Image 1 (cartoon, rainbow, N blue to C red):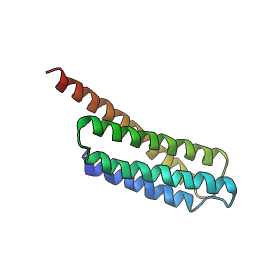
Image 2: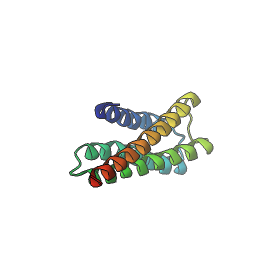
Image 3: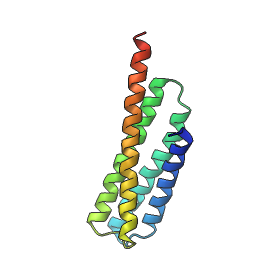
Image 4: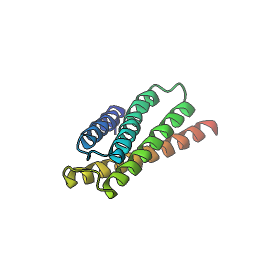
Length: 125
């Protein structure tokens, strides 16, 4: 996957989250988790942009790790929203965004592992 493709995916994921949050019930819990979800999903996209401009391989791994943390936070927020029945939209949309979030987590885990392996190979030369 090209870096621009991944960047588009995390941006599209953030947009999906905005659409999900626009369809939350009106309650304190919905506001709390919706706001947190928008922040964490947006942070993953913004930090990925930072990672693409990393100053070193170590900086890249660090910034990708931040993206991964934010994606995991988003996933947990989504699960709480889903289990608490705070989402009033189409359940298929919730399943779609949970699946995309899980796929993004897997991509970032793999990318971080690959980068760490490549960095250790360079050091051992």
